[in-house]
Image 1 (tube, rainbow, N blue to C red):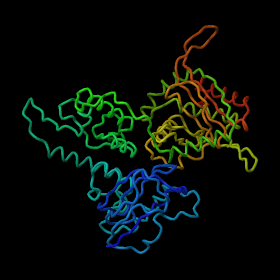
Image 2 (image 1 turned 60 degrees about the vertical axis):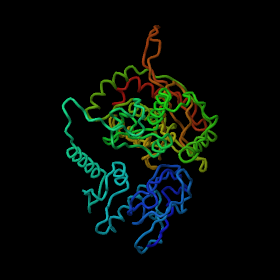
Image 3 (image 1 turned 90 degrees about the vertical axis):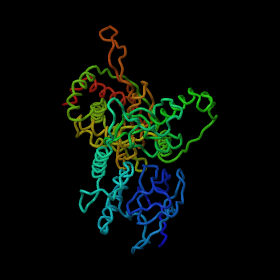
Image 4 (image 1 turned 135 degrees about the vertical axis):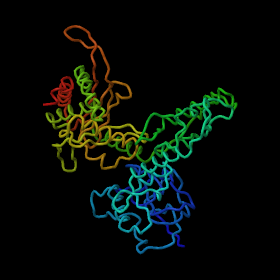
Length: 501
């Protein structure tokens, strides 16, 4: 038996440290090569750290929430055998390969594992192993359908569904007519018989998907994730977000106080101050915004687009989109209108290179869409917007936004933008002064679409309007160009059929 130490690898993009968000194993656990042992958050993304060894977890050297430098030992294993080359680096060597991504490194590791997988070893990527843990499936029981017996996420789901169907058939218990078998109360149910949200039918599920941050919050609040009501789903399974956990905990606390079970005051005074860590993605966002604000002199141009015709057009196309499985939002139309404006006024699709003393005009249109997530604002990039149709754009925006909120988006999917759109109207409000996504030179903010009073032929009437807030880098773009660009965008939004041309 030999003890092997495992160091935190470079999880991509040359990051120097990461926050150990959660351990997926405990001392004494048996693991196989490729099993996920920890989740680490860097300033770019949340990544899974797989084991390099077959063995037993001996010791964990870092606490959850601790910042760990790359190269520090985070875990040790007791292994039975030592393969040649164990002393090599813990992560695939991507030095000298510009642009090598975390995803590529993981793929290389998986392919290498496939080549070296001895008979009897389970071959499954980290995502499939993680899903198996969430569903309570023993990965060794799953038959892989991929090359060489590789187990996919679909294989895990199929096995889980088959096992559930078998269990339901085997566990059927005769019930006297007119009677129903009483379900056992879920964890957290009050002993006094008080009915709470956890007694609802949706709380009786066995599997709940959630991000590590949500699970950490549930642990902190003492909430059973399987008892939290939700209508959200991911891949057919119940999906719970942080807001659901907080709301559930507040209801439970209120019901407990009302029932007098604890005797605690329902109006207990909260702590005067609380702290939360400023690091990871949140810190990167802050540094990026500070760089932009203190580098580029911001000027904001406000205007309003009348979009009655756009509202009607979208309503007419929604059914067709739904038949194709796509949710058609206004953002797809805005993307096309913005690109039309950028083509007429290319100075807004640019970058100022101060080192070389030139303004770089971009003849491609990669538009960033700001997305609010639990970790802060992320900006996935929709590439080559000018080459895509409305439905394709709507589908891609939805997919990228979902990946950003689930923290499964890759750094590469948030790079290469030439212009950014931020939709603060989704949370209410009309106008703002958005901060430019440096080194871009402009950003367009969208207010809430509502019916507002407008004047038509001397009469005040109600019309659907969209408030626009365009922030520009005044070193590169003049106010007149900002106004002309905004007018062009308004024109296309007011007459969306022009976008078809």
